[in-house]
Image 1 (spheres, one colour):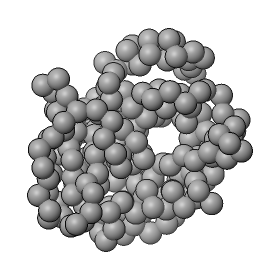
Image 2 (tube, helix red, strand yellow):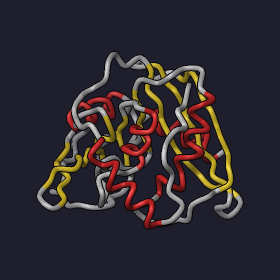
Image 3 (cartoon, one colour):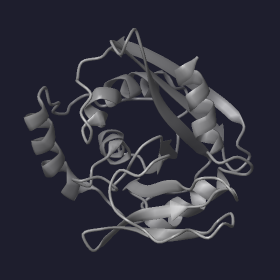
Length: 219
């Protein structure tokens, strides 16, 4: 997969926040995606006490959800752990992994937030902008916002709200388990994001994309 490396990168927290503020208005939250034949899961882990970033990408066929391509990349961790700025810590290694792929995915499902972020630019939004691909944030925990109780049936969801704005959905992917926090990343609407996450989650709490990528990132 061809990666365009012609972009600004922040070296300090102040620069990162300023860059997020400048990029957030470029995020497209309507459906700008074609046929989805391949969907990729993106996950990041750390080794050597956090000094090495290990990014994994798993590409699955859609709707069959069969593994078709995968890549792992490691690089020295170059940005500190700061909540709200995790994409600056994780994305460089993710780009290295994406560059190794022989199949370009049509949709990215990222283990993290899309616009459900204090400055509306979580890792799914940041990555989607950098590689110009539709992307969805599929987070296991709440970062910001509030919501009503989610009914305990697969496919049930409620809006995730922050400062009067709908920033995502709290989605039940399996009964009697904790919900997931879904938010559009780039070039996709909230409703379509939910549809694809559910289609990629036939059995377990997490989408198959996330499960494959997590195994790679943690191995």
